[in-house]
Structures are given as structure tokens and as C-alpha cells.
Image (cartoon, rainbow, N blue to C red; front, side, top):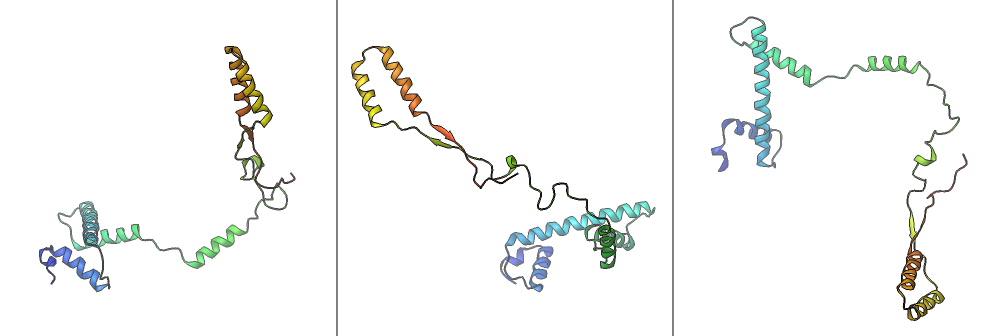
Length: 178
């Protein structure tokens, strides 16, 4: 045995042996602990169910029949078989006998309203208004000529109005007839 395996509990050695017998050579060490936890939880669940079955039958102790019944109930509860193909085909035939309701929207694919589609305007562009060279020169001349506070406050308002971005939105796709 390897150096680390001598310190392992018997159950961990069994899990390692099972993994090796199934051809699993490389795995993380915590996989063994995860399998052990699953194993212990399963055993506790089975024995708890077996004890309930034993008490229900009026027995003083759990016997092998109680354990078998508990395992069978776990298997039936955890793993279910799909119904046979013949039953599924019969159910499909019965269901397909009922015709689908007529479409109210007419031929073609029914689409949601245009406002709810991805081709409706879904973004906005901010386009700033650029001042022309003449407007810039006039503003500079006005700043030099005006000494009063009132004139400078009016210029600031004009600048703010000219720098306010204009919002434009448009659809991504071509316009469809309704």
C-alpha cells in the first residue's frame, strides 16, 4: 500500500478500491470523503426507514426483511423507470386526436406588438450642436465689450443652450407594414 493509505480508515480504503476497480486512477483526495459522506447518509436513511417498518410491524428489532423493504422503497423513490413505449405512443395518439385551435392572427407567425420587439427604438444618440466660427467670434467680441454682469449671465445661458445635446432615436430594422 502507498504511504498515505495506512492511515486511512477501512471505509476510505474500500472506496479507493472501488474507484480503482472501476478504472478511476486520478481523482482528488476529497472525492473519497464525498463518497463516504454519501455512503453514510444513505445507510442512515435506509436504517431509519427499516426501523420505522420494524416498529410498524410490531417487531422488537430490525431484521433483514425490514432492511430489504427500506432499500426497495429507496430504489423506487429515487430511481423511476419511464413508462413503456407502447403506453407513450397510445397517450400521444389520444392527445393528437384533439385539433389545435385556429389562429386568430391569420397566416404566418404571430408576433408581439412592435413596441415589444427588439427592432423598436431602443437607444438614443446625444448629438451636441456645434457653434459656427461666426458665432464664436461674436461671442468673443461680446465678452470684451460687455462689462456688466447681466450681459455675461445672458451669454452663459446662450452657451448652455447651444451645448445642450439633441436626442435622436430611430429603429434598428426596416419599418414593417402592419
